[in-house]
Length: 431
Image (cartoon, rainbow, N blue to C red; front, side, top):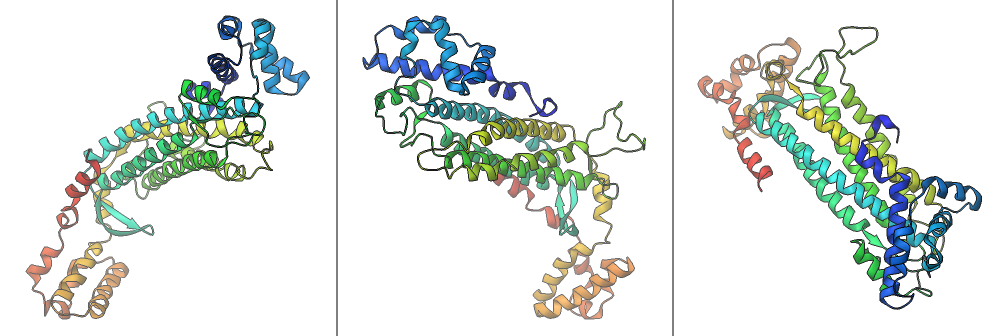
């Protein structure tokens, strides 16, 4: 991922030094396990550990010659670690190191992403509570439907990201496995107890059965989860983009005093951050299909998944970390315009009270079909003439013959649509 969309902590997880450090942790843990079970001489790790240093440049230089990253790593370590280094990687295969490391990196990334979601949830909750009773129009198909509150709208995202948090926790649990099982996973040259020891040491679970690799359905779930979270980010971003349109202007991204919106038009204030999130969501989701296709490997293992994971591992996690942080900052600094919400609410002259009139007509004896026709006729008249829906209703003889005007007037009440908001908030914000 390019620097523009990278944050320090997540980026560091995917840098070579961290990767090789994890490799060394795995190798040393395996050697400790072999010592414990008297497979290699006692004191081996004690002699290796102080001399085993990560030299990234040296490893890469060796890899250019040998064309194998794990061999290059082991060769580099052995140059300084002495003759005891011959016991490193005993009975192991490259994937024991690579797959266990990759899962650790995904776990490390996932834990940062969980913190990002927690921070975002706090910001969403704060805005939702602040605007719990801020009236605005609810829209379906982009058309005015019935009144809601802006806090209610925001609360839908709060609940969605709670689900995302649960999904990510499950994905981290799914990916947190370790395989130290040898060339085809049969433990022919390594004791299964060593795998148990390494897993416990590295705070992972033992992979119940591996071939030469950890099964890739685990990774497919992890990246699919990232894709779902990205889609939730985009849903929020698209809503902000719509609400910032000039004709709507119910909310607006914060615009700094020295900020400029267009190289040509000085008046522009564009929702660039939200648009950026839509683009990042596309990028993150693009990792999902390759991750799913990685599940099907030839026989016990091929490396068709390798190049894919070397790219999507860092790119998807770094991009999602950036996107979650960006969305959090948008929400925290969002400009909200209740007056414009009220103005837009009144654009259609009360037409959104149509369902209340419809239901009342059925209460006084009209069939639903007849009631619908009567209300729809008056609603279409309001649409075409930009007239008052209330006035059209009280001018309809069929209606006032059954319902007195003073009762009809009571139907046109905003509080009717917000009377259950508190129940919804309690249900969603309960501990």
